[in-house]
Structures are given as structure tokens and as C-alpha cells.
Length: 223
Image (tube, rainbow, N blue to C red; front, side):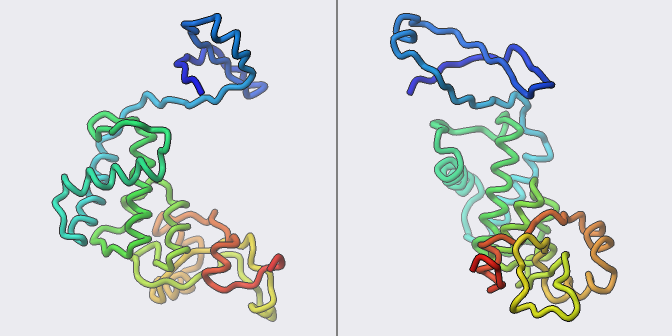
């Protein structure tokens, strides 16, 4: 597979298409291969923001305290792990001084998920550090951690099962939910879903899928 750099030269908003032009060095070889398909990797030219850099170092600091490792050494280890797991096509290192904004966002979410998956205690709420709130909520659902405080969580149905319905028989797939500890679950029922979601700047978009249903042993029609 050959990799050729190119430029986006035109957009068509009506059809949702873009035209990409490339410079072919060896036209004869290009024609001999008769390529008919191409894979486009979009390059984000926006650089990492100061706020993103602050979040990354705060997250690495939290992990470093937990494992007892120097931040610089840990940073190298986490960046390597990130590249191996998330960016299989990336062959080189990246700098937190000038890496793309989208890459920094992806790295932040990787660090948040690392903290959730490994039960790393944090002094700062993950809500203040994550970039993609839906991904953070999903990770907390899978690992039964409260999205607000990080303590052991139970599942809250935003889309209620309904009075008179048997939770053991109703289909849970597609219902919106949140992972909340007992205290925050009680708070939500006291002030209501909308007020709670607004207070903690949460999202109500995450829905129960097969993985979440399995974690909480929820009944699904396809089971």
C-alpha cells in the first residue's frame, strides 16, 4: 500500500463530497497499478490548546501519584501505550507542545479511560478533565464507577422502566442511563433528571447496549 500526500481542493455541501488532489511522482507506476480506491486520513492543523495541555498533565499527575512514578517517565510510557492501542498507523512520537488538537483530545480521553478502567483515585473530578463526556460516561458504566465522584456506581435509568413493569422481563436495550453512586443517585431522584444533568454538566445520550446490559445483568429481547 502506497501513501501519497494530498490536499483538499474543493467541497460540495449539497452532496457532502470533497475533492482531494495528489501529486504522483512516478506516473507510469501509478497507471500500471490502476488504483480505483483510496483511503483518506484527514490531518488536523489546529494545535493543542493550553487547556488541553493542562488537562493532560493533571491526568498524568493523578496516575503518577497512584503508581508512584515520576511524571516524565510515566508520560513516555502512557504516550507509547496510547500509540499502540489507538493509533496503529502512527509511526512516530508526538509532542505535547505542538501536537494537533484532535490528537490531544483523543489522548485525554485515553487517559480518562485508563483511570476508570484501573480504578485510579483522583482528587479532581473526571468531569472537569474529560473531552468527550459520552465516552467518559460509557467507560464509567462498563466499570461501575460514578461519573460524578468515581465511587462504586449503580445504574440509573433516565428512561424509566415504568410502574407495574417487571425489571426482569422488560427490554432494557436502547434506554438512556447514567452510572451513579448511591449518594448521587439519591440526589438525582431528589432534584430530578434534568436539574441533575444540568448541575453536573452531564449528557443524557448514552444508551444501554449489549455490553452494558451484560455488566448489569439486564434483560434484553435478543438474549
